[in-house]
Length: 218
Image (cartoon, rainbow, N blue to C red; front, side, top):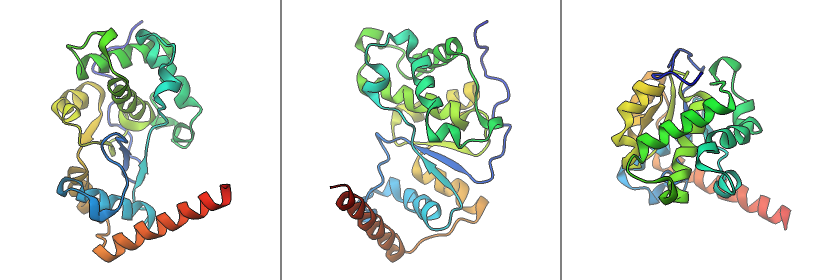
């Protein structure tokens, strides 16, 4: 039996803290002084993740070639699901928040999302970037995006935002820009507002940490 849309039990679980999945193609964590004005909210989210532990930030375990190499479009959902099952992202989630789908239902959901995001693009014309976009929101949906009321996919990609209402109504997936996520959840959860110097100090500490890792591994 194939999936029925809209998906049932959407946004029924309240995670302890708001959880944000970053679109790694559009929302890169980098020096605060390089952010455009529409990314300022990400500074606050980063601070409350690294310093306050009041939010969770995560990225999906999607590796384009690892998932898509030699896999037919019709089977990309089950291939992505299999990759997710091995990830720490999936293992760290409470059982009640996971969207537990069979391989065939995973393929169905992936193709349904693909049809919404790229309805006029033939399968043979899908680019790796477009496939990666579907992967990211699909994996977010399975790991908490459909069932949790405070789980958000954060992206600046206009294509996601054009279809945001459809994703919310059909799958329960909330899609916001960094600034929308910040303005929505900062007052609700009394998130700390970092100063410019605090944000820059956090970035400096991160770079020093990465440098130590690189030195230790060389």
